[in-house]
Image 1 (cartoon, rainbow, N blue to C red):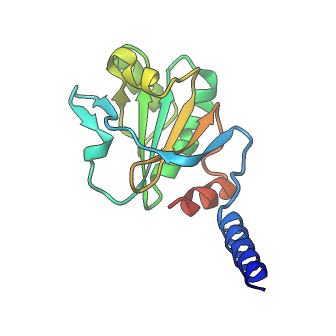
Image 2 (cartoon, rainbow, N blue to C red):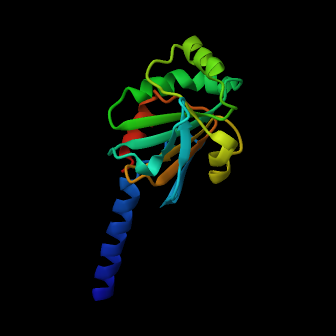
Length: 171
């Protein structure tokens, strides 16, 4: 009788855990089974100042979006990424993977009417190596504890209601 009770309790716990995890809305989103911690996630702002994601003290979800000015899918998704930045509880770091060129980057933002996003760079492509990126756009999603929880390979519509709902379900 005790064994049956344990099995029932275990089944309920597993079922609740499975139901509590919302499934990502797009096939190109890979959700990690276990969040991954990185000791340093260092990149540069437009002025050349180094930032480490781990040293930013806010209680938000973090998105690192790797892109390039020559990338057509990057151009397609950047306006929706810009609108996502306007939502509460989310901070986006769009990281240009090209050699730093503010003139090209500013033109890219102006042509797409980007208003909410700042400009960041991956000097020496260090983060490309850390995250073993294979192409652009690639988006890395971190929870509020700055643990990597998901990766998006390719472009998506960051305004899609199902995506936004799924994103807010990440703790």
